[in-house]
Image 1 (cartoon, helix red, strand yellow):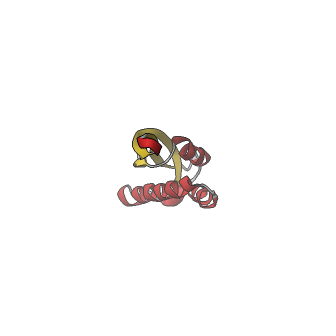
Image 2 (cartoon, helix red, strand yellow):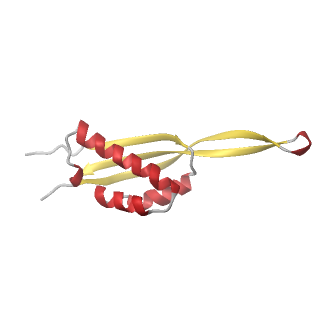
Image 3 (cartoon, one colour):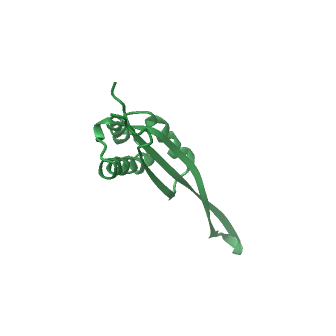
Amino acid sequence: MIKNENREAKVLAKNICMSVFKARRVIDQIRGRSYEEALMILELMPYRASYLILKLVYSAAANASHNMGLNEVDLFISKAEVNRGTIVKKLKPRARGRSYLIKKTTCHIKIFLKEKYKI
């Protein structure tokens, strides 16, 4: 039986209100790991980004099982990316009629899951 190698489930979250560096710190820990191992790591990490990434990994696994019929036990994180999004600029009023610019950074997170091949 020949399996199609292009079968990978993906999930994309856009404009997450979080710094790219804070999200990459978590993504680097789970890249290349199995699905179950990544869930255990994310549940125990003390960062705010880990909860959002945990939800994305759950969603990617649900896409893989529902849309492609893949088994969740055989999945691993093949690719995980964090890219910079737009910067939201706000003005905060300051003393003497001046204003102060507040920059809120956003990021885009992509997670790809593939199936392990058993030989």
